[in-house]
Length: 420
Image (cartoon, rainbow, N blue to C red; front, side, top):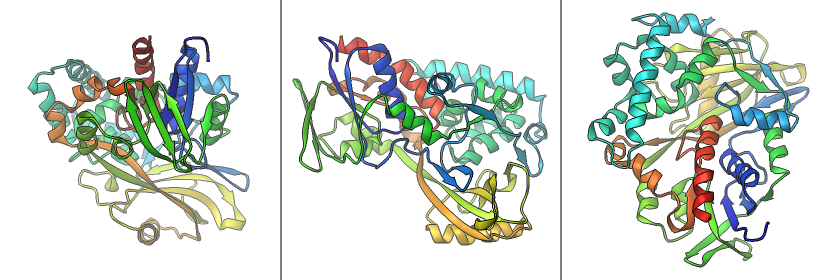
């Protein structure tokens, strides 16, 4: 720490905490310490080696919006490779998008991007007009159909619902807009989608190696005062800091301290979804790399159904070709999801030889529409820095690594300015 530097604590060493810390180190002389309750860094990024195949259970792709992340990957010796184009119901994704009604895809893309820019600009105000708040809370499918964006609707079935980012029938258009921007549209149509060869977990571990990360560090209590903040760990260890960064769900953070009104409101305004990824083997399923199924990405989709599958390699000892299968868990248990998955694979003419590993994630922080209408977005922006605390992660940007990093790139300079 340089003379005059501050001590900053970050709670959570997932993508949000790690990218925030990396940006702080690059831009300041402050001391940064991360506390992670798990035994590993990376959060919902999890790479597992099965034989000679590296399996991604969580974060998978990089697209054009991952600019800073790909810059760090190059610096840390992580290489990326392009993936084969996705297919939906056996046809190339672009052909599926073009099967939607209305004007050509390029025309709809321009109309969508213009409407998106206008709404997001209105929401940047500290007092957005009520019409903008109501529009932001509108269910995605209603918003798209009112503007005759049928091809963009088809695209969002894949890029929003298919990736666990909400049912188009209910998810506020704000969430879809945060993820589906020009970078995403171009990445999909131009097939500029990549995966890190060494794996996402390896990337986060290399990034974390340059940081002060405390693993298996369960925070028990936080006391915030005007003179600094005290963090008490489960083992009784105490440390003192000048500023805090919450890179964990706000409701869990609030349980560790006396929350502010904004922390209580934000915690109550978010409902978490889920995503299940299961590694299976089969000898008689598809040989392409990635398949999506439109019938399970339709508005009003039922939990449990197979949304997509990705071929990951081959291991005769594990039962044949390896696949990651993706489902929305709803209220189903892990074993119930596996039984549904067996039925879904059988319906598609194949047989599961073995279920190797399953991960069920707490996933996608969705804002309640009534909270958006009541000014949630402005409140979340205005609370940054209150009580010497800053906030990042999926709750404040979007689930994707790219969105989280973009959020941090904007927030870190503001935090450094406030710290002087």
